Amino acid sequence: GSPSSQPSLSEQVHRILVHYREEFTRKAPFDNIKQALVLRRVVASEDIDIINEKKTKQEKSAALFEIFFNRDDQDFEVLCDVLEKHHVAALQQLGIKMRSKATDIS
Image (tube, rainbow, N blue to C red):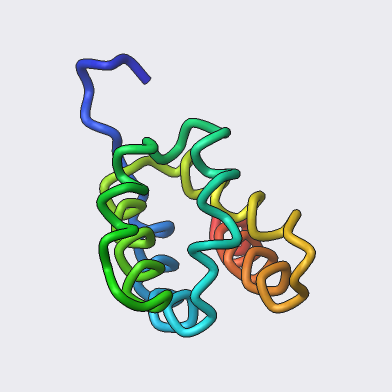
């Protein structure tokens, strides 16, 4: 979209984020995916610096996940993609589940 318009998250993706918030936090992928998200320009390195001040991987991951509530569906797609491409099977599974939920409903 244009820079002037607020990014909008579809109702559907919002529900998916709410649904997977706990699992994402539990799997704590922050350290595994932060670089990829910065490279894909979904998350700013400033955001990462701020999040890095939190104590645990869980807290960091939760804070990272919150960012996506203020983004659009495209950023959500990138998050799924980054998870799916990761070598940790549990993260791949999470990315696949989140993405398939998104395509399910549409």
